[in-house]
Length: 189
Image (tube, rainbow, N blue to C red; front, side, top):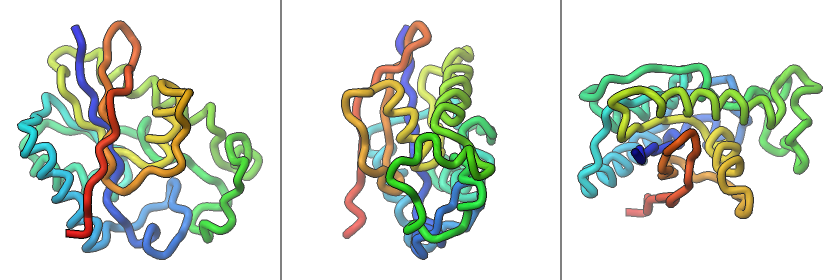
């Protein structure tokens, strides 16, 4: 039976605004980030999408976004397996220091490599979707996690960036994820 996963990036944070590498560091949602999460919530409401379960990373920016979306009306859990990529000594530094060839870069500086993030994210999301009564699931995570997971299951189309509160819709069946679409929002209104 096909199940549906909505993997979503959190709303704008103070570090996003200040162009800082967040990774495992955390910074709070800005007022704009809260507004973005409320707009994403309306997407789910307008399309009559409900969830059997909801998950977020253990980081505040993701769990706060999840709480805005679900209003704590859905059983939720925080999981380390979908936390943001750990960037080692580059955490909280300027985004200008982020290298163009980064897949195996950060492991040399106390962080994770692409394969590390891909393995833990895929294992965690697979475990979630294998649970009973998990036909429609929301997981709020982070930009790089969404990107790594997307490229694992849709390698022909690498992503340039992942906007705040972007929603990736996947179907899950027989241990495999199929990318359906990426939903972005108009925050200019």
